[in-house]
Amino acid sequence: MAVFTPVALDEVNAWLCQHYNLGTATDIKGISSGIENSNFFLTTNKDGQTTEYVLTLFERLSREQLPYYLELMGHLAQKGIPVPAPARDKTEQIIGILNGKPATIVSKLSGSSRLSPNADHCAAVGAMLAKMHLAGQDFKLSQPNLRSLNWWQATIPLVKQHLNAAQNSLIDSELADQTAFFASKDYQALPAGPSHCDLFRDNVLFDSSSGKDQLGGFFDFYFAGNDKWLFDVAVTVNDWCIDLGTGVLDQARYDGLVNAYQSVRPFEKTEIASWNLMLRAAALRFWVSRLWDYYLPREAEMLTPHDPKHFERILIQRRDVISCISSV
Ligand SMILES: Nc1ncnc2c1ncn2[C@@H]1O[C@H](COP(=O)(O)OP(=O)(O)O)[C@@H](O)[C@H]1O
Ligand SMILES: N[C@@H](CCOP(=O)(O)O)C(=O)O
Image 1 (cartoon, rainbow, N blue to C red):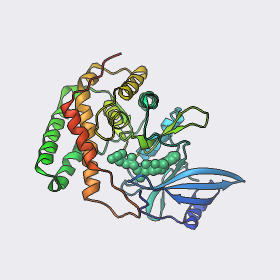
Image 2 (image 1 turned 180 degrees about the vertical axis):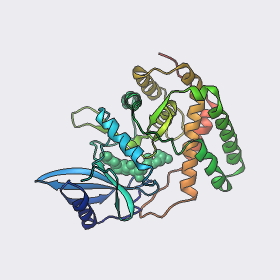
Image 3 (image 1 turned 30 degrees about the vertical axis):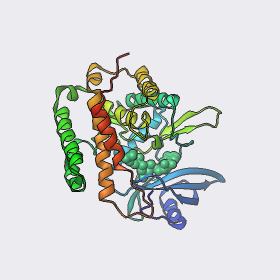
């Protein structure tokens, strides 16, 4: 992780007591995975009942940007999509300030990540992603994906000095192709709405307490934004359906995810035509952010930057091998 801003039990207790009706904090533990925010498992006791929450202190996002993510989680949770529901304080606010940082408390989902998923896990994720897209259609707030084309255009010049000649040529060429893609009529026509934009294996939980692996929920909505739904699918496929060593797509997991998604929301013709460029866009997005995190790191108590090379490999794969999706 990342615990960028430490929080002690007495600090959180004073804060809870002043602002929330959640009882007393009995335990707080820093979470060592995650690279964006400071996260803690928080245990409370209210009238003898113990409840577990996740406390997040936001390190990069401003207080103004947060209502979109938190209200979206609340909206989706209300519609039956398994995502963390934000707790409201005594004055119905979902954001407070703790140790100088914007902070929120959300419900803790059950289960654990499946870091070596099979086709059934991918199918469960694909179907729920499509349901989530449909459930988000009537969400009233709107905020763009802040890590889209404008951000790539602003960030690539900051990391280029660290790249070799071949990498520089690849990143320039892909940025030019993506700039043209974003300006195209096909791109403009793609269906869009609230999207998670970071639905990696480590942002989904599965619960096996019933004896069978069941989707526990999606979390970490802090890269969410209104974007093309196809971008969300491409981000998800580029992580869930690949061989992590090579970046090559695994056909069974790929079919599992894409077919299950389409069983809920079939792709439109423009989406089918845009698929390969969107897989490349999704690879570029994470290559750039990983380069940025790697070469311009922040202070943290525990921080392991993700390997940028991984998404460079995936981008090269998607440029070399054209992947198709068909209509159902
Ligand atoms: N609502 C939640 N329910 C259960 N576990 C959670 C929840 N939110 C976060 N976590 C745990 O915290 C870890 C870090 O959270 P994450 O949102 O990925 O951090 P970051 O935003 O810093 O990348 C996750 O891997 C997961 O184990
Ligand atoms: N999923 C991204 C990094 C974002 O970190 P997360 O822990 O908030 O998902 C990547 O793998 O580069």
